[in-house]
Image 1 (cartoon, rainbow, N blue to C red):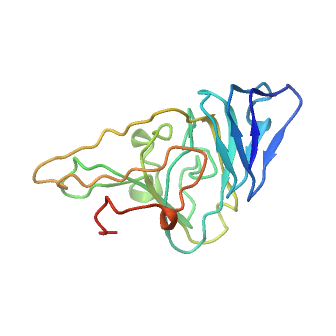
Image 2 (image 1 turned 120 degrees about the vertical axis):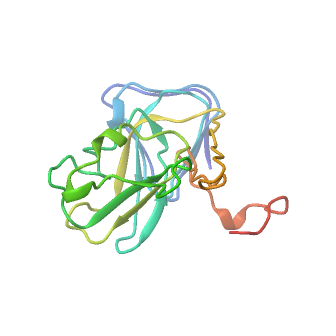
Length: 196
């Protein structure tokens, strides 16, 4: 694992953290070259504490099945991104949902509205800590890797959890809000119920 104190990515420069790369920025992390200045490839790890650093974070999402994702960045619009097109009608080949615990009848809020029209009013920017359920059935709409572009999440991030009686009884879909993945299999889960 590489370590740095203060790390500055100057305008016109770039830093790529590869698929198995690991970098810990123990001081201030600064990226003066915007989203093109810092790229974290899928499987790469960046540990840092500086808020508001612009970056691109790649994730491979398998085609053909449902996946749960969360954004490792803030200030990124969902519509028009790699994850959900800005088109009317919407192309076939994908689905994109979030879960709203307070909705009793059908808590899965779909980006695809009736008649394949975008449900744009329910989707703005990715919400930090919110989980999303996605499926990309083929490569007709999107291709791997998918890229998040925004300001890296850092520091302590909490999630507001709902508990609506007679709706979904407190079930929430939350996500890892950081740019480094979590290997669930390697965590000590002795304090957690094994219900997953």
